Image (cartoon, helix red, strand yellow):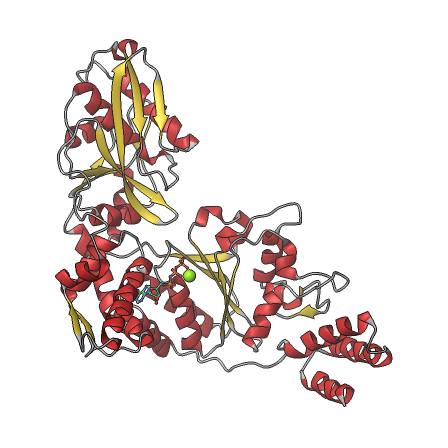
Length: 523
Ligand code: ATP
Ligand code: MG
């Protein structure tokens, strides 16, 4: 009966010797307990876990770089350097005959293809793919499980993932590793350290399973939006590949070759019934999305597919071609303006370039003056570092007032209000220094700022411009917003190489080492 059956499953599970002994002992206890005993169910459950998690079942690796390249290319447009890095990573693994080594971590804004790349990697290796989300995990026991004595105890997410995989060597995606936090119940990141450490992960311990479990054949890949919120020791274990976001042209290609076909299929439509023109797709990109990735774009395409499906099912139409005007018909009024955020040169409004967890973005910095006594007011949910850089910018302007053509006593008669609109994105970091200084000088001299100029750079009290991060992301967002001239710190010159050629050609880069040079360009 049941016992014989379980015994057979235990013996066939391929467990290590020690674990096998434990399982048989538990089976023995189970057999002796009356089935009504509360403990009976608990033991039964435990044995069930032991026999269902994979102990020896594995897939054979296909270590074939050419094949991997084909799969990556088939599923993804663009991302040339990213794909190259992934292939290098796999090549090293192939050379060393081992998939051990640093964990890959794909970092970038939402919807740039991190999860999708990881899936392709699994497919190219002929491995099973599992994914767990670490977002919101605050408790070590979510990773490692609860002891069996705990009511309703279960293994943690790692073991659950392994059960889902059914093999000992899946590609295991740890999504949102940057969104773990810790509280009084213990730090999940220390458990993750054990998971990711090739020296330790052949004997991973889960509180529920109790027996050690070998994770050393798993290929872990992590994803994160924001590298800086991953705890240092974890970050040190990973080989980071960053994905910056797509240009307009790349989004168009991705929509045409991947997103539209995928959505058509999901809606059971043929290309005959619904066809998107290139121009139609470009319109969706420009007027209905504003993002580094393509998630919103995919959602808009899906929305059109739903509407067209309804028209076809109801017999209203037999086929639809979605061109630019049709996009507006299906998606309603345009959501975003394409091109310059401000249509005229304005006094006291400068365009900065920000780098956030969701990619680059442009942001307007507004300065207004009112009669008063030099009070500085800052609004728009600014972080502390940004507030400091506003102070620094103001001090710089004060010390250089005369040279800049400003009444040196300006702060005795006026209050200054610096505002950064568009509230949702948290704004911090020192890189707006130069933008704030420009907006201040513009407001104080009443000279308008050229609207097609965007800028980024930290400034010092003496007006030196210091390098900043995220040049590529910031530049892509500037391009998206239709800016023409980008002011960057001279020390960031090298980063310009990373910007896609098509974007570089449409922008003029001005490298500055002093704030005066930036003012010269912008005013
Ligand atoms: P998140 O941070 O929100 O998890 P993500 O980076 O994991 O985002 P994915 O889910 O991989 O994003 O991508 C979103 C969608 O866009 C998927 O349907 C994916 O296939 C598609 N996609 C993203 N980048 C590309 C690309 N370069 N080529 C083709 N399709 C892409
Ligand atoms: Mg993802």
